[in-house]
Amino acid sequence: MKEWMKFIIVFLSFLAVAIVMVILFLGNKPFSEAEQAAVEKVEAEGLLDEVERAYVYSSSAQSVTVLGTDGEGKIKAAFVPEEGDMEALMLEDQVTAQQAREIVQEDMEVEEILHTKLGMEEAGAVWEIAFLNEAGRLNYVYLLAEDGTWWKRILNL
Image (cartoon, rainbow, N blue to C red):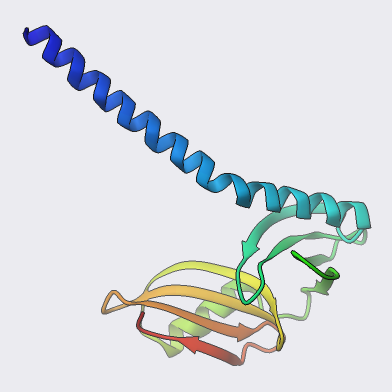
């Protein structure tokens, strides 16, 4: 009887881990597919020669930001919306992700930065920085990539 109890506990533990892994895989699949399709589209258009990173940027409309280098070795971002035309932006004279994080940390009470993403909004390219403040509240701030000025703040969620 004791052996059956051990077997049942081990089996249920294994089953729980397997279910969690399947859920995580299936939950991430749409994002992975969108990122892969955007990378293929950017490469087919010749906007980037080498892709370093791609991620989904969600706003009023979802898009995928693809970061990489062009044929001349210059850092560039391509914004691939679900509908509409792609846009490209040279990142040489823009605020970097690190600089955007530093601006936010200087002006706000930041406990932990959760992510920094570049995306396209009606104001132009913006850095979205999600962080937890010292009270443990979620905050989203947006800085213009052109000069690092504040565009929008969503605080204390």
